[in-house]
Image 1 (cartoon, rainbow, N blue to C red):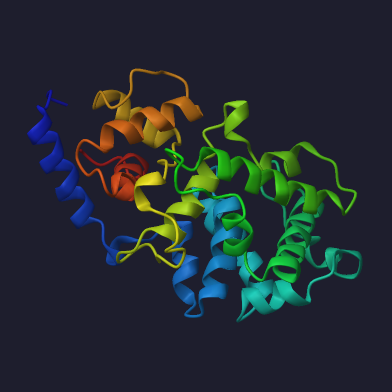
Image 2 (cartoon, rainbow, N blue to C red; image 1 turned 90 degrees about the vertical axis):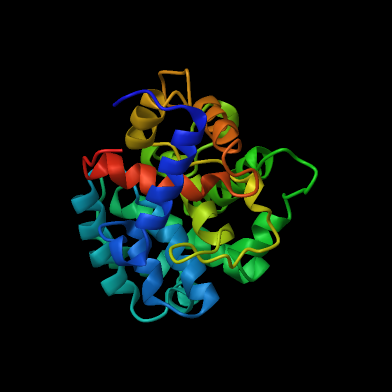
Length: 263
């Protein structure tokens, strides 16, 4: 790829952002959210889909297809009625990489308790969100820890369950949590903007291997290892192109890498 100056890079980023609209969403876990209209269904589907968004995209879609067949027409209603002690066996045939069926069952208990106690994941998250902070690092950490504590009430203690709820203060890039936040906070053809209490410029880009590789080539990061520090650095550099909405470029960059397209 030839070296681009700042204006050329901005123009390329804007071009790809516009090119990757809703008609090019598939394959992506985000497509499962677009099945629903009610904001609580979208929110619930978003957390489930983002949590399983790691590994091969074909396997991600396959697992989510199985899961949403069990969930049915309303993720919010399914979660609201869910009880781990009597319902955990419903997931016995579902596993996804590090996640066992019991890990997934514990995830649903965490979500169920969140909705029962707080009304929505948004209201739980807002307990920890303060507008004066530079980004969502602190609130994301506390939100994730809270969800892990709720999941742990099931008695499940596993590597998989801990992997579901990463912590930026432990160095994790928190790709899946940042992906969920992008879907909830931003608003365009792809993202839903249903958590409008949170400013878009506080988001941090969800960094996976595709984002990391392309951003290294584009000199948007000098770091080599995927981490929270890399995610912050890439986000800070993207703010020079769009200070109000730096994470808007995420979907296009990721899919250019995932589909092996030319930037």
